[in-house]
Image 1 (tube, rainbow, N blue to C red):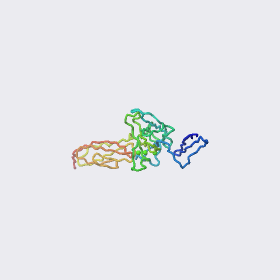
Image 2: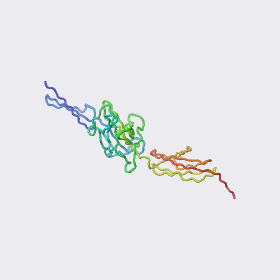
Image 3: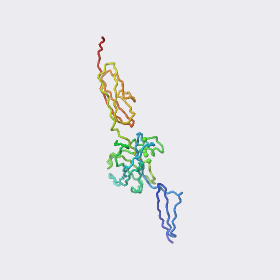
Image 4: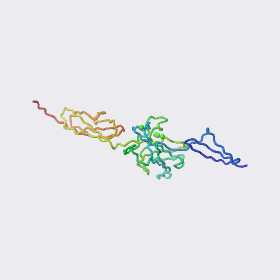
Length: 271
Ligand SMILES: [Ca+2]
Ligand SMILES: [Ca+2]
Ligand SMILES: [Ca+2]
Ligand SMILES: [Ca+2]
């Protein structure tokens, strides 16, 4: 009696799979029916985007980031990290690690997905950093629409770069909710308060705030507890007082400025 040789081939079309059974007794080939399912290929991904409104959520109209190098690391020896996969985002900002560009994924292994390029706000030279991670309402689809990236800072060879840690389990399935959102850093926001002359005791003076850079609208929070959407604050100090304003722009970036007021008794001469 001859022994049948089982040959299992897999054709991968983004989740659609088929197997083929070769029978050496009669050289026939049996193909699986489309209704039969096998495990989908293991993938890790899949999105880098610019979080225009800095809410940590993938909103309609927010662009994917094209041509960004993404590497996959793992550690086979404690303290040593090896690149085991490399890819580049496509025109839609999508990255995928699978059998074509990484080692086969192992069960119960920790992988580090690292963005290797500096990111600028699309169309500008404004540097960006990772947006708010794990934002949005908790629910079964939260991870499909949030960002998961932090800046690495743990003795990794990729310290200082955006990264996501993911540990596989057994029966590993496609994972496409490991996403990197970026927003513009706050370096451009500058705040000053106009110089103030001496104030007569009992008088009022307007502190005017000048803001440069950042993204409107701004909010103004003062050291005496006053908050306003307007760039001024009318004050009536009775003693010399330092006022500090903290300006917050629409991206959540902040900048501060202070001014000293000097109070004196004024003598009014009536004629
Ligand atoms: Ca957003
Ligand atoms: Ca998340
Ligand atoms: Ca996510
Ligand atoms: Ca995703």
